[in-house]
Length: 273
Image 1 (cartoon, rainbow, N blue to C red):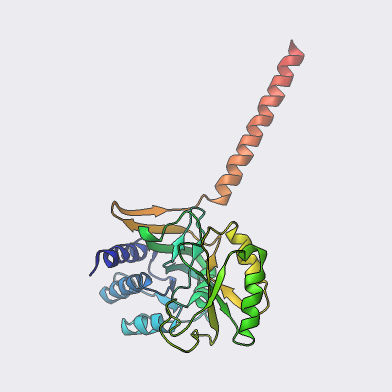
Image 2: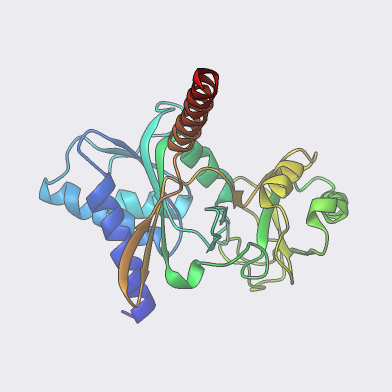
């Protein structure tokens, strides 16, 4: 096993060990890092350490791996609410915005991970970046119907300024040209990869613009979804979490109340004197 695969294994195993409990509904991601989380879940079910687990896979290949390990599978049709989803990412920026979909499963991944109470992202330190764009192309899943038109529409969006759209060819499971035919996703759609030489100025804005474009099924920007990032590197494994909105609101309310109290006290003292 290569050193990078060992890092992926550490994060995948830790995600299952720390976040999965008996009786849960678990979302299973797709890709070389998520592979190890699926592997660990299978091990713990086989040993009896975990029981009464059902899982929802995000791709055909994850489904096949899970079935081979004896993991009971369901779908969103029967289980619309998940306790936790575990998946890798192609890039993670300081604001916890993600690029996903290098493996071509972005639509199913997003559907499953949006339905989870917690979304745990597992990466090695090579996936961390200062800003989305240059580090990994942004995949966009589009309908085959008039796909060239849709690609032109994507390129014309102001929020996508500077992108070079490239239609994925060959296998949909990577963004390398490894065939002469247009790559087709598990959903029967095409993928266009948006290459950027500079950082995307506003990833959430770009995400919203892409989603609103007719012909676009979904895109690989996952913004505001992450509960925790488990990152493995030379110095070990670290868990990073975004600031909780509730905490930020509480702190702001507390600060506002404190300022108000000081103002009232100051006014009272000035009247007294």
